[in-house]
Image (tube, rainbow, N blue to C red; front, side, top):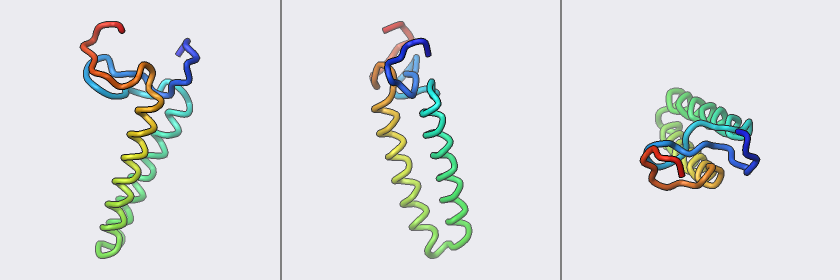
Length: 86
């Protein structure tokens, strides 16, 4: 967190993708995503006929948005890591 590179998420030390947020903006994105997932789940529970397709669409769109934001705002970008320092 000492670097001011504009990153919102840390890179994973092993594997591909993002780790936990390292800036408040990343935490806001993550908490917002969880809130949207809970609301979509409640919508599916509330009305299975209409809520299920709408809830599934919300799940898909929110997950894609989180993926694009995390990929764009991850320190060092997304690449395969074996646990060694870059």
